[in-house]
Length: 92
Figure 1 (cartoon, rainbow, N blue to C red):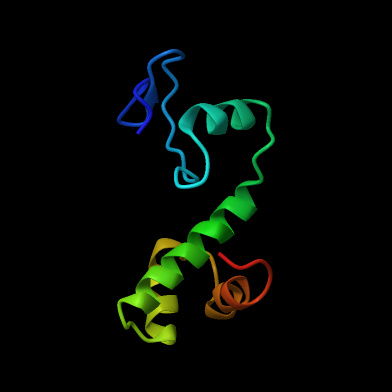
Figure 2 (cartoon, rainbow, N blue to C red):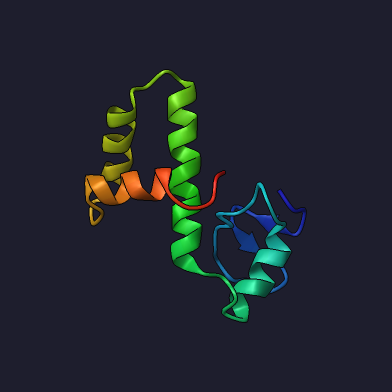
């Protein structure tokens, strides 16, 4: 965690946010990109879904069960929509 960030709150700006790309970019970079509307929220969501699926599969959870668990976090997405996000497009 960035020393300027405590529990998702940036000490410089006081903005409360969570960096969903913390394993790729620093909190400061994420905040800068987000403040300039340069973050594609749908792509970030898809990245998180792929990452979660990969982790569940590494825990030996079946593909269909993993998708169902992800659906619990994203109830507005259909099973097939999550499957397409996972299996099509860029890889994690």
